[in-house]
Image 1 (tube, rainbow, N blue to C red):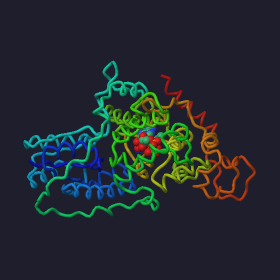
Image 2: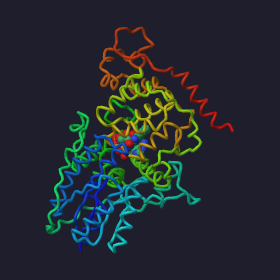
Image 3: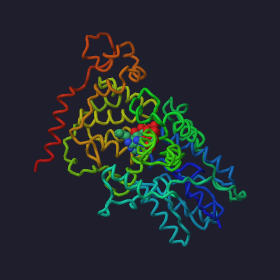
Image 4: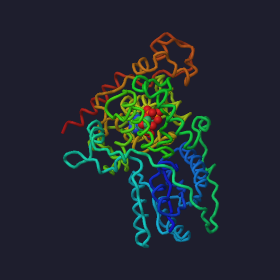
Amino acid sequence: SRTLVWFRSDLRVRDNPALFHSAAKNEVVAVYCLCPDQWLEHNDSPNKLWFWMQNLNQLEQSLNKLGIPLVIIQPDRFENCAKQLLELAQNLKCDGISYNNEHGLNEEHRDLCVEQLFRKKNLECQRFTDQTLITPGQLLNGKGEYFKVFTPFRKALYRTIEPHQIQPLPVPEKQKSVLLPEVEKVDYKDLFSPAEAISQRWPAGEEEAGDRLKAFIELHAIDYKKLRDYPAIDATSTLSPYLVSGVISLRQCFYAALQANNGELDSGNDGLQCWMSELIWREFYKHILHGFPRLSKGQAFITETERLPWSQNNKTFNAWCNGETGFPLVDAAMKQLVNTGWMHNRLRMVTAMFLTKNLMIDWRLGEAFFMQHLIDGDLSANNGGWQWSASTGTDAAPYFRMFNPVSQSEKFDASGQFIRQWLPQLKEQGNKEIHAPWQYDIHDIDYPTPIIDHKLSREKVLSAFKALKQP
Ligand code: FAD
């Protein structure tokens, strides 16, 4: 018998549960659904979509080497997937379909529709946990509820995780070539155009992702805890785009770190422990996204924060988007995002807090702007990060915690190296002046004066949050 294996954000042949288990039993044909209308509605960036297409192309080649043909169909939107997949399965004489679960309301609804339609036609539908170590909904607290705080979640996960949930699966064996009826060839590789510097910075493919993982574990993981907050230093793995498109799995990353740490989760090298814990943040936000559907609808996790009086100031929002706020670290970070499709984690927090707390602009606008540029845009992590920064989310920063963009700059980019990289007009400034040029007697620089006063804006946001507590 023959199974249709539906690829989505799992663009790899290694450690792919749906592919591996289906190929172990049956002959398989792979399928991918192009849904540009839906993706753009989800704010997926051209950078990310371009990256997906390059990885799809690499996947097609890897599948071909395994004797597995890849068919591309074009439902455009999620609601058309079920019907078109069924038609394809029937045309190709498949007995069923299999896929790895994705999270998010629209994705989960789409997947359920596919499952129901296939079952209605007496065709098999097999679904697998892939993006998380533990299936969302299966790791609950003592009250049988989702964990809302990260540390107890991580501890419970470490207590209950079984070896088979961490161990990556091998590449399936090569199958005999499949003879398919003629199917339309779709040219997908150039459907999306990324920002200029993207293609060299983010080569596609499982090999690349594997090399990055190996290099990180061998060279950087040990110092991760110490250096991960300094944006001018290459101290993090830069694996996020590969994880989000599933070119590498969470299991592969977690397993590699665990091996390097001699199988120890909560002891051993603190850099490796810290990195594993960051991977679990990714897991945590996936569980939260699944457990609280309101997050997929753009709603705040802490419902009362919906009453915050967000500012409608287009001018300050545009200044933030364009990296023209007058705060060098914020501006340099925004330039990094727009030019590379990626931003260092420390700076994601700094820029998100600046938008939501200093400018008091709705986190949803920042969340969307990030998605429209990120090559690693991911609803669960992005929404989680934004709501954390805005203090509207689960286990979020307390509302009175607010980064000062100047002291963050002095602390994490002390020599101004990162700022100089992205703001050449400040290149000549001294290590002290570069963090807050307006405080010094500097003339003739083509750089804006600050668009807000940190102290005043801090008072404003604190009183807005305090007002929420009043009846
Ligand atoms: P490393 O430091 O090497 O970490 C390894 C992996 O762990 C990352 O690739 C990522 O998958 C995971 N991870 C690390 N930190 C976090 C975190 N705080 N939350 C969830 N997962 C984490 N991450 C995304 O993958 N997509 C997003 O759209 C995204 N948006 C964010 C928005 C904001 C406002 C904030 C504060 C954070 C966001 N993050 C997002 C999390 C984090 O910034 C990135 O995952 C990280 O910077 C990616 O770089 P790296 O691969 O070098 O990470």
